[in-house]
Length: 529
Image (tube, rainbow, N blue to C red):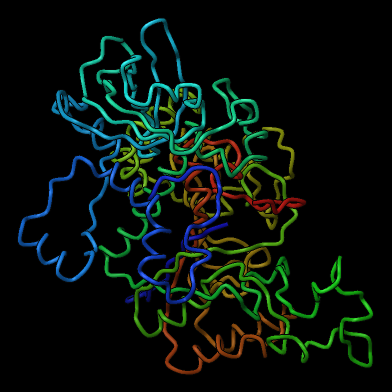
């Protein structure tokens, strides 16, 4: 699960298109190939590149002469024209009518009629396809049997106003080239709708569907918006480590990182081959890091290190939790505004096919004020609702997803809700204890459909309180020596929060299951792709 987290000091108070996999043309080259061999090996790729750049203007005579004198020159980078560039403007592409265009993408559908063939091509830049119109006179029309769903093609022609009602533009094709064929009898993604459960089994191909292409683009926009927000507000991005020796949350739900289990034999090492001490425990001194090491569940402890030096920092990286959960959600204003403004076509798709009314829901988040509520008041509200919940409601117990969603969706009509001052027994060791001795200065941001989206707290800056809390939870203080040092040398009040990035994508797209918001989900019992 990827996560974004930020920590700041408190100042006052708390492309290239390819066909099916094939041998790399450079794989067999010696370290220092001769010019003749290099030219022969790359000739096929040069022909393809020349075809895709046919419309580019020739270089000036002086540049051509210089290139001839010094050998072949490396051309400057030129971004290809995408379908989104054509259709994404305010005029929806009207200015392109009559202009030449080369489209590189994958075939969604091919409909052959008596005198004309319609091929829908998508290059992934947007939801829309480019309708390409072929006739028997089109160069390359003899490849029509290879133009099947999933095949990659290069299509050249002239943009024209469409006669059909489904699109305003179409491409009158003068030439089509099949770059990579696709076997129509085995290609698993056809025009008919496929269940998301099935598409998870072909996660390497599901980005070609409308749904998962749209999810990927919205996810990208949210990641960009996250960086933009923090960068615009003076935060420094810190790369937190993936491997750690400490348990940030104190829950023990971590993956071990070890070299003691050898893969030299089928099935890995036998238990007797794993080095152990005299009392039968694993001898970690013989492991790679000479101590138990884990995949991190959070980068926020490391973020505090840099916050005490740079003041305002954020992390944005993958985290890993070995929690055997199969729920739909385990795995904001600025973000919401960004996707509504920059992913309009994709958001319209989600509004029509995934969650009707999602755009209104997101606009509500932008326009309505957030509700502030203490944990104690939230418990009182839930008990007073007389609603029968699956999980019990009692002071001291953690709020479950059904409780969180009731609060934000029902009790407050879709408004985001911030709940603060949770019991210290259900929160992490690093959260600052309140004066009542029972709660900590923690907060969760709840949003409709997802529940908790952000969790944050003021950190415990007092050394004696932090050491007492570690002892109370039976956590080894030696593993947190560096974290305690931050309290020994110039400790300051500071706070931070963590955002579940996949939950943010789920919230913005309306996808029911968080496994469909990440390119390659890792779940109990499955680590495919």
